[in-house]
Amino acid sequence: MPADTEPGQSPLSGVLAAIRPADPAVLADARAHQDRLTKPRGSLGALEDVAVRLAGAAGVTPPPMPEPAALAIFAADHGVHAQGVSPWPQEVTVQMVANFLAGGAVANAFAAQAGATVTVVDVGVAADLPDDPRLVRRKVAYGTADLSQGPAMTVDQAVQALETGIAVARDLVARGARCLITGDMGIANTTASAALISAFTGRDPADVTGRGTGITDETHALKVRTVRQALHANAVPVAGARLPGEGMEAVEPVEAVEALRVLAAVGGFEHAAIAGFILGGAALRVPVILDGVIAGAAALAAAALDPAATDHCVAGHRSAEPGHSAALDHLGLRPLVDLELRLGEGTGGLLAHPLVCAAVRVMHDVATFDAAGVTEKPV
Image 1: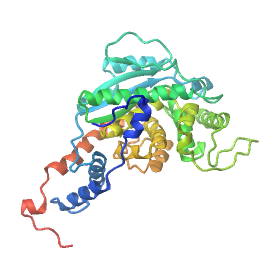
Image 2 (image 1 turned 60 degrees about the vertical axis):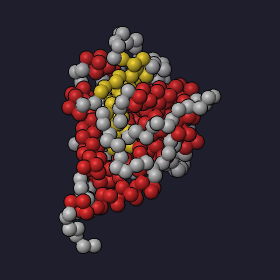
Image 3 (image 1 turned 180 degrees about the vertical axis):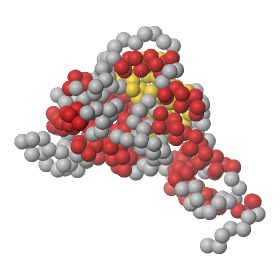
Image 4 (image 1 turned 45 degrees about the vertical axis):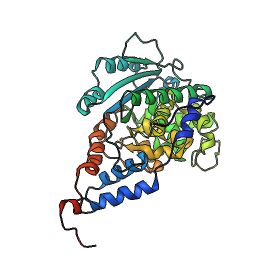
């Protein structure tokens, strides 16, 4: 598979150079093949679009079966937690990492059902974790700085986290994965997600900031103010966003040239790592199933770095978080599942994986009208 880094080339620049957009000729062939199968045209709805999308991304029709799948859960903490945006204590991140490693989380149960492996990556947990052979240690720092007061991380740290995601994607594919699923863990990461989504889509913070793991109206109002403050403190202009007395002008969404700076300013280590994970999968032409709002925010960063990366993504589900719909609309992705989930961990992506496999299976196994001797409906 392509995506090897040239001598003297950084992992990030090498991957960006290797990503190719969906092949238009293959997309047309895949759509034509769908129309010849023994079913009314369009009768499988969104599943037909998924199969065609994966064919274009892979550059061949029918596309390879997207199995086995591998879930990567990137864990990190957030300095903005100090602002009171989440009712959960920060140590829950450490505790949930232990739960993932012990196999006791919802993500583990769904992964077992889907036959997916689970990899847990410490990319920025604010504590030293016990030794565990199942844990991938790639800590950039002990959590980010408070994004409402200034940059959450340096650009160098953001690149380090991006390249961690790239390395994890490459390792999982090298071990046989043919589909990657994004997962995350980090108390207060929906606040950083809202800031990223507002920055990259140009949507007002009030429209994209949700209630995360469940917060009161008062805390939600604080969370919206915190996102506004983060964008202001980091000089990230956003359409419609105004601070009392500041009079920020409405502007266009952030361009690609600003992607790294914005990611470093208001993102989290897990956002950057997931963005790298997406880019790594795209460079290898292995489909990436996105989970919820954290993955959506990360995908916006990946798409700002290279728009072609989106061609290799499938939206597993639509989160109950309002920012997720804004992210998916901006990316042009249609979610496969809408069950009002807001857990994260990769749960929505795992639930969608069998549907993605079924969509591709149709391309491989269903007979055409000619082959089956079935009379096609007159055009």
